[in-house]
Image (tube, rainbow, N blue to C red; front, side):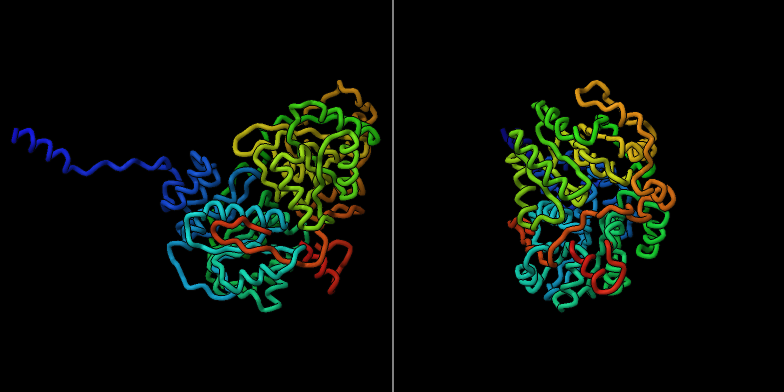
Length: 472
């Protein structure tokens, strides 16, 4: 009996093995327990390629020059190591003096980044706020006065509040620029340079862009120092998971074709892109007449209206969301089944950003493009970028042989300028871009447990140009 008792006692005295982390041997395994817990709560099983490549270098304090298509998990790639860095080195917060600054081109993208920080940092005691134009700055200033570790901002609103003395950047340890190609397209380069003049030289800098033309890479090299280059399919967009097709149609038949497509119940969560703001509104009205619920989101909408439209789309209140390209980089809805290009974009690269709104998180998706005679040259540019033709569906009621055989040049010669200058080489001539409108406003503060709130166009110089850039 004694021998058996001793044996039992010996066995009990051994340490109980601890369960292994499900993220062992991956980049997620290098994260602190609080972040691993948050990642697991989101259902992540393993890092995406950009996360696997970026996280270890960022935890080592390296600068990053990254390119990746939309939907690759880029936000988590920079947000997780940022949160770990700040949590591991706590400091007393100072009024209006963030430790990390994340710059984004649009209100929607800024809000999405803020939501991701809220999600991943839910088990940490870190404060952040999101600021952008279009709403009152009252709540934003209130949050800044309490102190925040992380500030997510659009350029114009950031500069407005810096000028008013509410924001001080001398203690920024990490500076992140997201979707830089879009910021340059929107005319924010002078604003970026003004911000750079206020952040410390000694900092960690992350520079992310969906595309990286030679001119943009030259700009990046003036901002980052000895960066690690992380590139996920940089030369050709990886869209293999997206079933693409083009339908040739007369311009006056687009609405009828759209309604006929939406008669299919499998087309159940649809993002539709138009070139112009007025066209987005008109499409929503046409769909409403046909009994199809939808909403529009573009720069002429107030921030409250844009938020209502996006939330209604996410929650299934609206089956269809009609957007201009202001939303192409900021929308993050996982279960979009179809992207429809009611109008083809003037820039081939924008096509990739648009269709990337479907096939998120490893899922598949469908992208359908309408092409009328005036768009034929734009389709050729898209196919040149993809390196292959977009499959055409010729057997549909509204097929236009005229559009199929059209040899019309690109509108206002824009196609030639794209080929000469690259993706950031200028705006389409004769067309107006979708720039957010309204007076500069604020966002809203975000503490753990709360939901985030929220280029020069026709002006060449001077005060008017500055105001135009700041409407973001």
